[in-house]
Length: 124
Image (cartoon, rainbow, N blue to C red; front, side, top):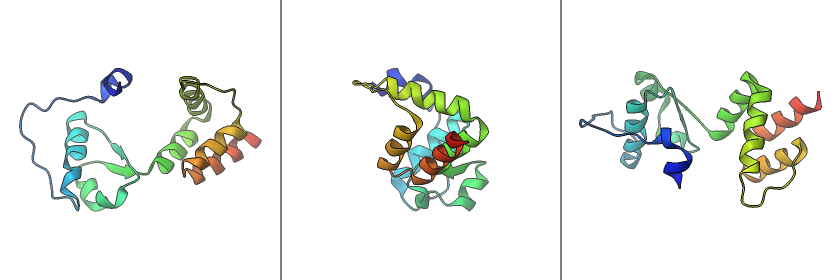
């Protein structure tokens, strides 16, 4: 199902890759995939296992989901809210939503700063 939902997220590694040592060696595949995909950002709530200085040498930044969503909202509020609405409608049992409900949903997922930003952006 993940392959079908996000076909561009799949990568193939043709040659062996080497990368710097990470605090958790089990995260090496994430960095390898990001390198092959030429990603600029890795989004994870496990940011401590991707040290900022090390990631900078690879030309990448690591952001929590909360940081990533706030950045997306700051860059394009309407596009970001539209994307979130699309995701909510893809649920098995989509419910009508408004920005207040969206903020509550974000809070339930520990995206507190994003929820606050949604409230601020949509109240103006």
